[in-house]
Image 1 (cartoon, one colour):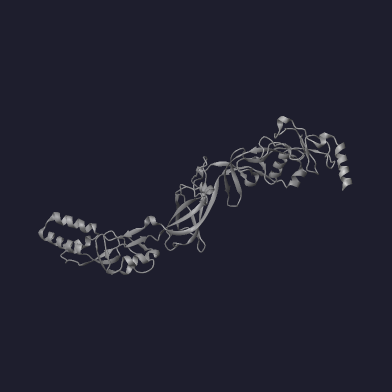
Image 2 (tube, rainbow, N blue to C red; image 1 turned 30 degrees about the vertical axis):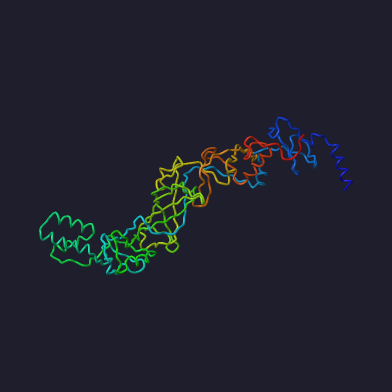
Length: 429
């Protein structure tokens, strides 16, 4: 070991200084020199002068950026892609469970106080459908009995003002049929039936509250809720769409709904009813509410379904009508794998020139990107706002190696817009 150390020291002593050390101008510390760089094909050595490697003795070769011979292309597995032109169209998929659309929930309330003496059959049982006009409860109301007596007296006296005022009272109670019976000579009704003014379905989760509210013998007050009825034909699907995909959607556009057991449901009318104005900061999504009509006998609340929404962008990169191609914009489109990105700076390596001997010369192309889109075939592409034009050829497979070559050469690259810093290997005085 001692002999090897002595021999190594002697070798270093006889080597010229310009092969061991790279001179650097004091004013260029940390900056690219702009000169040609030379690399050893065997060792990790890069210098600024031609010659041989001070470590292994092999000839140093100039490092050039973006020039690839046919053999180099083959070794790198280089693949090219062409920048195309087309619309920015995506398919957005989301999953969720349908639920009742409470925009159409109706509440059945009495307009007069009294005591429940009977509960009708329509109010019993889980998820019972109640038709408009169906009887709900029979009510004994002293206030109603007194009003009937006054109405009979007004009829006998022919007092038209009093008759009109009392009839308006019966109308406010939704009991005009009681006044009609008195006008026909009927007697005073001690018990009156309260009917549901609307049709709908009783909610399963509210049956316990319904049983308590409609308990026979219970005193109720005007305006006290007896039943809440929902429309089983109208449901809502609430889904969460990633912010990058939600930008393609707009309210009012159609949605295709599909279930696992029935497949696509073409008879179900589905539209985006509401797009949340804010992004959930925790999961980076926007809430999308999809109105569903025609759901009766097709879906039930709680059904798991998938929503398929087509989105398109207009020339201003704002959501366009996905059903009207005339509103779509057309943009340069580049495969995702052709883009190198730091998250802030994005570049592609564009074919600048083709040589007759198969040589390809590449030039770096800083690009401004729009949204990323994926077509029905799973092809992932970027919308290009600037930097590339339709018809340009860019490196797809192998772009990273070309950029690494540029960094070694000290020329512009992804990480170094004005050229790389001083070489990583070698020493400097």
